[in-house]
Length: 304
Ligand SMILES: [Zn+2]
Ligand SMILES: [Zn+2]
Image (cartoon, rainbow, N blue to C red; front, top):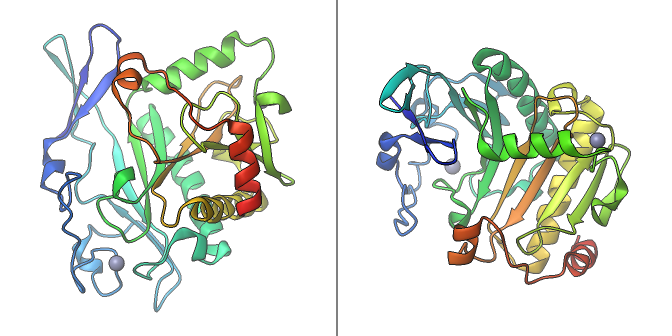
């Protein structure tokens, strides 16, 4: 059972889930990769994951959604604030985006990546209703980005509270006289389509950070059309190709930033892991940008 503990100074919650240290590869210097036949996300090993929630395709399947075997949250979680305990609930799911071990997301069929985006949209809607807090959707690619299993997958994690970053950004959207993401001035354009703009935000704190921003104002991806899901899939794949152009097999995270208030505008943040958070970043929650985002946009545009 995981617990949520609150920082009395900031009001932030953390998830205390010691069971997750039992995962294979839980720690960064622990580089054991499951051997052949041992990967829980490979066909034939379906019994190594909890019973699946859904799959797309048969013989072999193309995508599989399963509960996380080592969940950070569960229906039996508990809030722990000022010594008081209260029940909380959450869900932690893994979306395996291909049966092929070793394939990277840029080489998966775009229609399957689009199906993965559509599954994220549908689970977002379902879990938001079930847990009434926040649903985090993210991908960790590479050890430096926190992936403990190399077989491609994303994670969907619902929390019974709204975390700090989402609360702060929600307040920012509420304060702004006009939606900052409806204005094209938020960053340097890398590419755009009918539904999204792919930009390097001018204020990005880490090198080559990118945002994919829907052109239509919406607080979350809950009502994303299938056509928009396809375009997003294509842009995510182009982004990964462009990052590989900078440095092959670059570790990265992508995060879907979803909100609940109508004044907010959702987006996807893609963050290559080229630098480590150091004392300044940890001590200030600020950053020192070493690559001008205008240059990052130009290089990513040329590299895709
Ligand atoms: Zn595998
Ligand atoms: Zn907007």
